[in-house]
Figure (cartoon, rainbow, N blue to C red):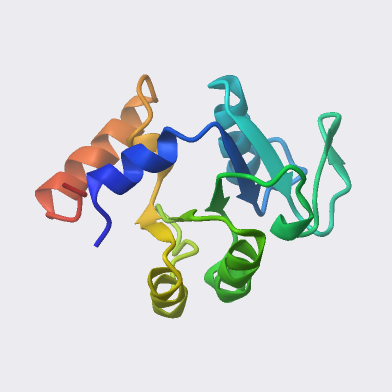
Length: 154
């Protein structure tokens, strides 16, 4: 299970890749990428179908990013997560966040096991909005629900 320390350690990073960013500005992946940028993260978009987003180079794979990122937020469906964590390991990334929220998210048991076996810290199945200060009320309610169901990290 993810610990609050793992969440805090990931959010303390400054250079992160966001894998699965849509070019649609209304898509949640795009909104999350923009949120990280507005909070002064150097958030690098990764999507093999997109070359540029908002004037920023969009990479096809984590390994292409130079200089390398410190962490990766995976916002794809679970079917691609295993390959993405392998890409992260190849790129030397030591912190991975597998998004989870209202939708099934990116978390897979095999990807979590791979990360743990390869010395990578993993936050699995949580939404960053639950931990970012000043987020909309809905995310606070999500946090309360996680606490009530004992699925909130501690």
